[in-house]
Amino acid sequence: MAASAPAPHTTDFPVEGRCSYYVEKKKRFCRMVVAAGKRFCGEHAGAAEEENARKRILCPLDPKHTVYEDQLSKHLKKCNSREKPKPDFFIQDINAGLKDETEISEQLVPISSLSEEHLENLIKKLQKASEGLNSTLKDQIMSHPALHDALNDPKNGDSATKHLKQQVDGKHRKKNSVFERLQIDIQHLCLNKIPLLSKEKLPVVGIGKHLCGVATDLALRCLVETYAASCEERNEEPLAKRIKNDKTGKEINTVAKKGNEKNVPEKWSPVAGIVIALCCHHRCDWRHYVGKEYFRALGLGAVEFHYFQRMSSWATCGMRKTSLEASSLSTKRKDEQNDDSEEHDDGGCQITDESSGSAPGFLTVEEKKKIGHLCKLLIDQGRVEYLRQKGFSPALQYYTDPLVSLENVLLTALPNHSSSPETTA
Image 1: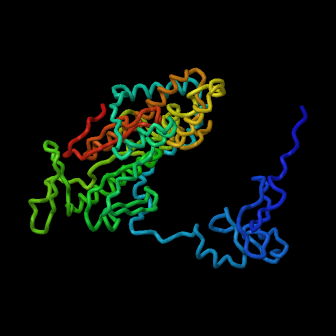
Image 2: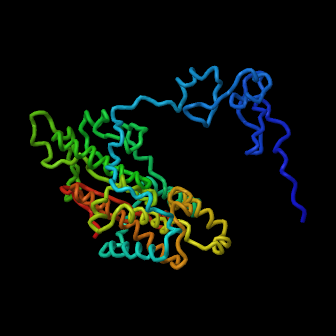
Image 3: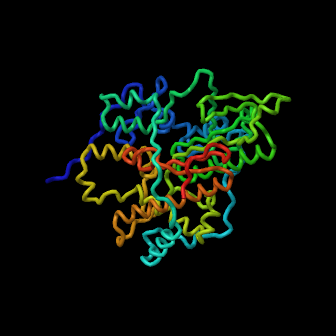
């Protein structure tokens, strides 16, 4: 059969009032609105005869867009990529952790390049380090009443119901609640310098929905070391504290007023609780990892951590089916997998051979999956031990069914003087 001819332009002429520049990569005309009397938008004005006298150059702050050379000075003052003033709660690398003195970059190669003997040794180390860990976590699958009607709506199909289960419930906002959004990398966030927290001395509950890999460690250090440790050093007490009586189920509000110390709880933690949905262990980083001491106590270090976090992707990425099995999937199943990737089941990224490493042929799919789960468990156990050392009662549990999300493990922690959940072994 003869080869088909190249696809023609999607339209012979640009839409009226739109840019006349043909974008070869997208096989269509640019859709930007043009100024009155102009044929091209500002981005493609260099292609217009009447604009030839003015030269457009790449923006030095962000080469993804261009600017007229004679307007560069004006543009730099308002460019969205310009460096903005740092808020008081920005402190460079405050939650980053210390750099490891040992350089390991020269020793690291993709997993696909490891010899079978080297990989077997790594797996033996993993299995030995994981001995005694409880790999069967407790199910704590709950649902907010606000979602019950939607979840039980017979009009919703399987995909819609699954999507609803993956969403954060935004209906909890009370009329008099105060919400403030901080646009900042967690790595540089100093909580005790946020005006509201500093002024009111409020206890904090840290909640994270799928904090990718290293972000979980940055968040834990932000809460436990930056905020909690700082408040305890200053011996601060909260202005208000709500205590729940577990026996009666009643809530008692106690306000610490000046000169009335008896209303202040005897033990108060600046961090009242932590709830983080874990994911993307292959995106962890040894420098930022909070469980270094735990790994070192097991005779493991940066090199083992590097390969374990790479192999952790075997639990959720790339080996759920062979290429032959994949070709026979129904359209419905493919849609479900697309939903999975939305919830970081594929680690929130496309895993390449270089990043996760091709799994060796001498391991079966189930063996690789089991190894991936062990890697995740060991990394998470380091976080559990870190929280335990910092005075918390931590726990790992399943918060949703794996059919909803393969990344279904929840890390919780309460201060030791609170009602603590069941901890993992």
